[in-house]
Image (cartoon, rainbow, N blue to C red; front, side, top):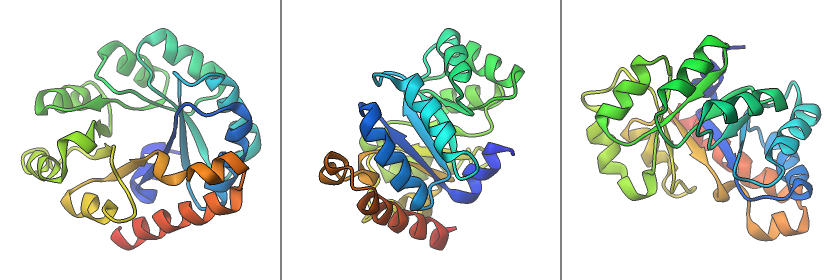
Length: 210
């Protein structure tokens, strides 16, 4: 399966950071039950590789599992060895993009400026992550898309149920979601049903806006 196609169809990526391996069980179950098809755990999370392996075993056929905060080629190799099916980074590292392209692993590198976005795209990234969106804001996304409308952007940071529709309207091909998908009380209680309900709300908006 071409995961870029999955991304552009589902228009959402779940991003999990700083979560325990135990909590990741409820998080993964809730998000997949809610309809998320792409789940990313950042590599600066303790036990990230174990969580990736756990999620692959538990959710094979329902969701695709990736690694985030991939900062160098060694991290990329270790993530893929753990089972990561796609890679995401907060920056443009051409060597990481080259490794991913050569090994047939989808990579969505993070960029902020037009120069970075174009460089990542020309290096082989089919989708570029616009980050940090919470600081850049909707007007920035709209302005960036005007000259770069041929480059699909995965917009990450600051999305909520109240504003995610605005992200799509401004030109986001997909949106990365973090804490908005995982209410703190639900995570603490291991309440996968509440997480699923929260996730389902975002999935429905993504379908409508699609």
